[in-house]
Image (tube, rainbow, N blue to C red; front, side):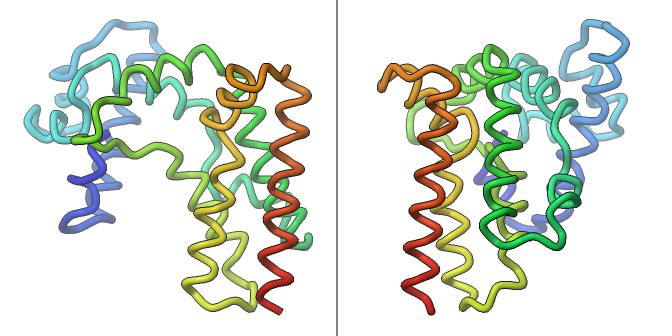
Length: 197
């Protein structure tokens, strides 16, 4: 998805349009029907030109929609951690996204190979991760910029990207990867919070 387009103008409206597009793609996926961007445009009620602003091809949309079907929204992820400590919240968020990534690893790898292009183009991935972390940090007694910095730093330890590094570069298995990423998050969180007391 085109991050630069999303970040200009009416961001909330653009995110709603993106959700409409994904939900329309879900319809075709759940029915087992093949589709193209024009079919999704008709189903979602947005123009074909609008679809192309978000997704350059049907493969990227299909892969993102396939992943989106299986992913809880940020509020639902945090429901089980309402009365927990910050560490329990962020480790719970990490565990959710790392398990999701491992359970759907081939699909995530396919999605990454479709959306990672030269640095002249940016795509938005992991929006739920950052949103869930912002929700987990919202009641913490930290300055706003510190909350943003901490959320951005913690995203480095969850999702498919760090799992690929721990598995493909470091040669770790799934359990070792999760253990190392959890340990990294604990150390960052401990250091960051002690620094801001």
